Image 1 (cartoon, rainbow, N blue to C red):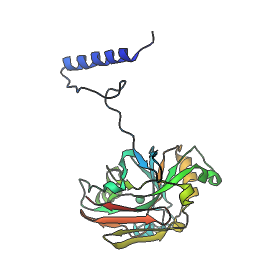
Image 2: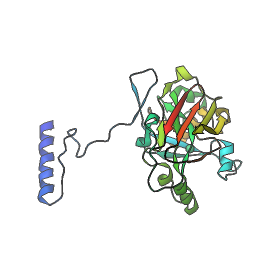
Image 3: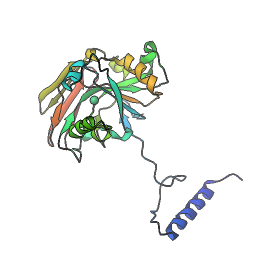
Image 4: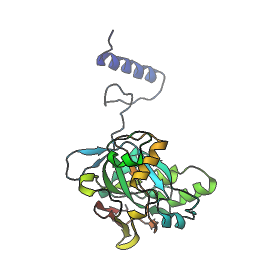
Length: 260
Ligand code: MN
């Protein structure tokens, strides 16, 4: 017999009743049929000059992808190549909504980054094919609980508490590549309360845009909706509640993010 939606609903109700009888608290679930709890809302970013949205799938980040930043973090760039880490999809939020100063930290840092947004993907993408997978670009922040990241480094523990917290990636809208070109030689900068703190050029990316995609695709299968935060230049520092961060990549976007 083909199972209908009504049958599913009936068995769900039966399940709830059984849980209630067993003394397990249940909540009325008014959402989509077929799910025992509400499915998570999809994370999206706006698209410049469009009513459509960019649906975010995975969020990859590069560490130490500018030499001067690798050095300020105590790396020897000759022996330590850039590397990848991830944030959860819903760490991405609209830059215009601000950055909520997170709990459990008293040293919270900014990192301005060029964000690559993929329209397609695959495994083992050839460097010469990499750029065809790009939908567009944006400007985003890789906000960091620096104290927790430092502690994790010291104890050789994972970085999630330092890097992957809620709202840790305030990001502007995505601009299609037809509007930006490939921004491989553009000023990238960030100011706090009007004072410039980071000022570099995407020409200094150690793994450039094409190489980043090719390299990442050897580790993970890339897909439409993936975002890649390409790393931050030197000059990282801390923010406090009430600060205003402004940052941009010439020809891509400029964002203003209030620390709330
Ligand atoms: Mn970063």
